[in-house]
Length: 271
Image (cartoon, rainbow, N blue to C red; front, side, top):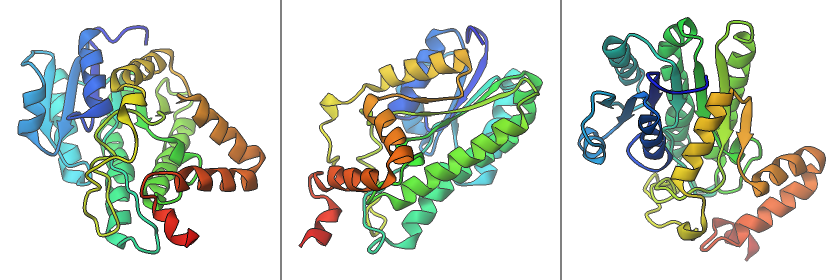
């Protein structure tokens, strides 16, 4: 897929961060872009009206919403060429203290949202020999302390996509996932804490992170090249390989890294 010109690109979670940047970049390449978010008014306010843009309300944790969204795209443009499963939330809390509703919500959005949208769109994507994409994380390769539900959801997403990729290996349909590093976005501000509330403030210096626009450009280049998977940062690649080769060392290094976070929940175990 050398160009997105006139291709139908579907993006979940399009109201901020990487999703919004992906939509902007795809539109700039001449694609027909469909985006969804839970808040339709907020979503529509972010984009200029265009014949090449479709904004829909959808909560991807609900199968019916996903079906309605994908059906609206197919009814408008007749098919789907690229589905980017981007919608997602994170968390920061010790498993010991986290309400199980937090884990369930992350699985419903990050994993089941991907499954629901992919299931509905797959016949149209296969017809066009298109691409299914999952926006994953290093947390899908290496479990992260304080983020048990997030890691579980990303491991599940990658397992699902890898299985599907293998099933479709000789169909002309491509399945891939990408793992950004820490990217300047809203995901940490709305990350869930132990009781299911939102974190509100990020523990990271967002000014030092990769921009969402940079991340989107890498993703769309990978889609065009039909890459199998992309780990975007040197730190991420190191974490993946270290976890494979020296897992015990990786345990200690990851623990120490997240212990240094401002207000790290791990500090409870250091007292």
